[in-house]
Image (cartoon, rainbow, N blue to C red; front, side, top):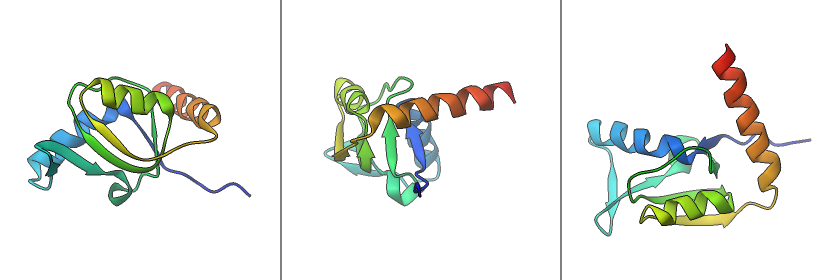
Length: 102
């Protein structure tokens, strides 16, 4: 039986940071926004989309490409790389495509 995993893409992080800033609930570490994705209901970070802000992200699991994008933007990722990266990336892309059509 497969366990349901809530995923978020790198491209959604800037928006999440902005939302948390507006709500005045954004944490910082080393003068950078810090987001614990598990506190927001996400267990996995995928690489779809772009990120423009240096963010420190804590997450249970992430794709290698997501980590590269976070680091390229000057941020840091705290968590374990995923073993089944491709399968999850494809499922997320299919979900996004379906949502765009609806």
